[in-house]
Amino acid sequence: MKRLIEQIGVHAAATPAAVAIADERGELDYRGLAAAIAGTVPHLDGCRIGLLAGNGRHWAVADLAIAARGALCCPLPEFFTDAQLAHLIRDADLDLIVTDRPLRLQGALAAPAMQRLDVAGRPLWVLRRAAAGGTAVPDGTAKVTYTSGTTGTPKGVCLAGEAIAEAAFALGEAAGASAGDRALSLLPLATLLENIGGLYAPLHSGALAQLPALDTCGMDGSSGLRIDRLAAAIGRHRPTTLILVPQLLKALTAAVAAGHVATRGLRFVAVGGAAVSPALIDEARALGLPVHQGYGLSEAISVVALEVPGARRRGSVGRPLPNRGVRIGADGEVLVEAPGFLGYLGAPETDGGPWSTGDLGRLDADGFLYIEGRKRSAYATGFGRNLAPEWVEGELMAHRTIAQAAVFGAGRPFNAAVIVPGRSADPAALETAVEAINAKLPDYARIGRWVVAAEPFTPHNGLAGPSGAVQRAAVLDHYRNAIERLYDGDQSHAAV
Image (tube, rainbow, N blue to C red; front, side):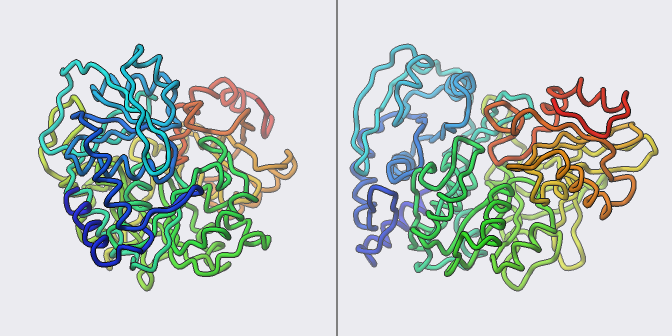
């Protein structure tokens, strides 16, 4: 992270009055940002420091101050449950936590010592905890980012500081970043993708990172969205760059189609975090949205491959970034060179070889990467046809009446789906949508019957990950009885 901190200092000397970070409460220019980081460092005297706060200038300054101090930073996602946060604090053996919501942590920390600290115009509290000293951390770890985990128990990914800075630089280069950019964060800064793409990459380029509280942008909790607020936020902040997950892209595309959002000046929209239907990408681009699909994972410091202007192929996630070697294993698994990944917290360190992603994919003759599903989720139907459910789920979710979907059918005579309907979608509309989607799919990939979900898939109920990716095993477990009734009965669909 030294490179990034030094680069902020370079901008502070060369363009001190250029605005570096902003939120709904105000802004800091590069000179002010450098001073705020330096002023915060002495108050963060821990070795392993957690950060639990909403998006804003205070989050950015605290995160960068931890990096400047050379301490280990562990972002604590707000969308994790209290039980998950307690596990994370113990697992990472944090000795200091910086937060704007101390009451939420009091139970997990058992009445910790507390100090108030003003950061970028916001009160933060520094909570001290007696570290047990028992969790091994690989040498050189600057950041521990927690994945949601398929079992709901998060695990810490240990990342090297200079590799993080290099990833931010490479992402900015690929996206054509410049000092004139106005990035707008619509995802939590505690997620690695937004941390690097929405904060570090703009700052490395001398650009503006806009970090408003997510509720001011229409984000309701981890998965809800008010499109009117999103439209107003885009109009207010006038971004040139955005990072979106598929559900946000779908909502934004619908809003643009309805004339509710003006995207003048928007030059680069990166979308990733989960499978995206080519049909949705096509629709967005036809409306003038400069959408570029990407692919990444925490172990590879977020972005591995990204489409860029002039280098796009339908259905691909672009070419690998220059600092990411990618090859395809004998069984079709995507293998990634991940030099910045040091191992999992408390586990043996990585051997430094190619990382097995668990994703199935292919590289074409021109080096474009295509992701074709998860190795563990791919299955054979009862008729022996192999299917990656992510493909079918993407086609379902591209339809305006379907918000989320999970597809199953291993060893079965037909595929079944659990469907979260879009707003105001009734059973008849869903039936029409499934019929239209089936008409475009080969027979072995079609949905035979489906269940209407009782609630959206969210990180809070364990049915989705932080990026919105469906946790298929959790959905199957939750709706197992309803799915079995589909195979036993003669109804085409059912509500739970």
